[in-house]
Image (cartoon, rainbow, N blue to C red; front, side, top):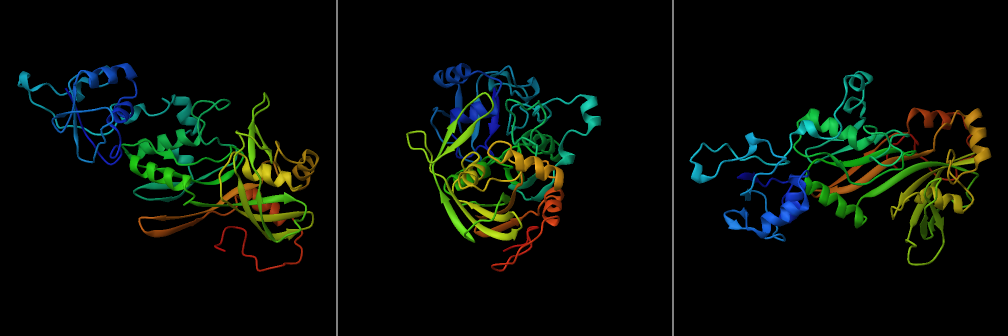
Length: 358
């Protein structure tokens, strides 16, 4: 018999979903079989697939799963053997999270020590992701080289019983803040908050030319198109695949030939900022997908800009009744570009673009 005590990571989760999460190496057919054969009990009562679990519930599985170590399996009452204390969380040990590192990789410095953590709380961490690092594993990303895998390594070192999971993403070329949940209930809360636009996300971007308006809103639908060279978003098209997209902006500083803008997203579509500003004739500097390629080559030589100038600089949300505001300054390579530009006359009060609260 396998016994699990439901902790906060699995509270308010269906029984069948809990089994899939807690025992990821077992097949779905195994879970369906044990539930159908009434081999799963919750607090002593036969469990149902759609049953919602609560924190503190005891789940007993009268079946031995292959993925569970023998030391974690309890004997049945008829065997009259000492019963070890029930465990909680994942069936597998923390050392199996993510990728198993080779000695060479460890010596090369892969892992959590490179994370730039803005703040760590009991429920979540906010991480400052550098440009060039993918948010999560995927095609084109080598194993072990994504922010999620860095967080798994960090979670192992911290002794967490939940794999830290990002609640939203940034493009690989974009730097700045991401929220990672440290518990299952926290992840569900942030997922809902982001879906309902309760997390306010702000960015700094340097765009080509000088905008005519000091502030404005770009409200144009976005439609994803896939091609061999990579996915892109088309602006202003209609149809069933078109998604509403709204981007608010304010010019923070005019420079000769460029504007530094602070952006607030109302929606969070793929490449939203990049596609929207390109559509109004002000593409982001360093954008290799939507940008002015000739200008990109020029600023690479003259200003030393070797990446996309887009940075997630602020997050605001209410957590447990308290308003949270987190700022993250421009990374050195972007601040260096700003320092080499010629500012124009201010048109309104502008705060320090390094990240001070506006």
